[in-house]
Image (cartoon, rainbow, N blue to C red):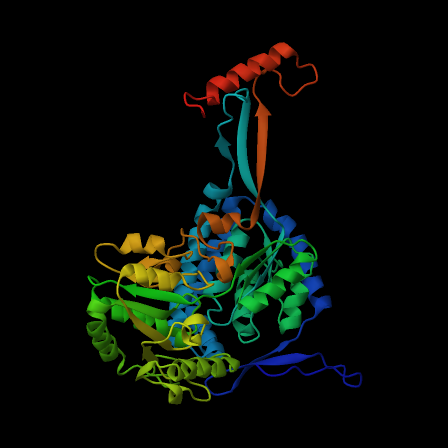
Length: 504
């Protein structure tokens, strides 16, 4: 991404910015910097489109979404190539991200009616004369601000679910991946025959800020914690509700009875894939001291041929956001200065565009490599005396997004004790590929959920309806209610809820 071209009175040139290939600096595309006027216009178009889209049946919307799913599937090579060029990630990783996103679109298209449609609710004995139901209505227009690291999968968790719920969407992709965002909107617009149900607005931070204060009904944001706080503050001006996913500092825990080969494989992929630029990736590893040496032997053997580059043999791509390179180096340097042992890589592994895989052990818990999100291909691996210590150290962070546990006997029990929104046992990041599971974190990792039934309901409001089926046995909601009726009501509630035990 390059600086904007400011408009001049003489030329009348509209401001633009360039999307660059982070591996070599080549220009991928040029896009307009859209401000408040353009964003407000897009939201107004979305408001009109929402009336049509929200008025369709679940089946009709589902059919459009399933067609979109098929279009993306048939053109997956095209989208993967574009993602590869804008993010630098290998083609295979770009394709994998799209495959998972496609599965989510299919799931939400098929399950929206069951989850959001009218559902009977027991009225209880007091209101036995009533028929009660709840259903979930679309909010209207949803704004989505997406990240650059997974430009298809991550925003799709908001876009597809908001669409399936009956909302129109205005999507502001990252300034590093505007082409991917535009591609998604263009293909969906094809499917709905030109209607502006899903639109893209491109630009820098000011464009995102304009979307936050526009006439939208909810905003879903994925990005850094500091930016998430700014988003919340901007949305607060209009009491616009927000969904925030703000990264993490996830750990992988290895118990003494774990399959060390598989644990090392998962730690390596969880920490290094996508050049470590994964919010739910592995940054810390806590290994039971009884198997620590064996685990280190296993992971170093598996990592020996792993490298970053822009050639077909490289498994890791470049660092997409140039400013992150300095952060990665500072975390590595801080860990080493405080006594960490370099097993692989190190300070010299950080180049101008690429960072080679770095593995550190015995990393002090007060170093930034442990306390702050690194977002690079590094792993901090420390021995622990017990799983109690592993859980305690894992939870000693303000983040709480995801994580993994490797253990044969107590894996699920350990996972339940980890303070995070998601945990995989004997695998890594598996929850992200299960459409029916909610995705999101706690603490500084944000709040709200995408994916699954929770993700669908995030983009709706609950509508409760009661209908009187017959005359009530006791008319409680009337000024004609008398003392006799009050007595009956008191007697009934005592029978129902008085119980046999009382306080003494």
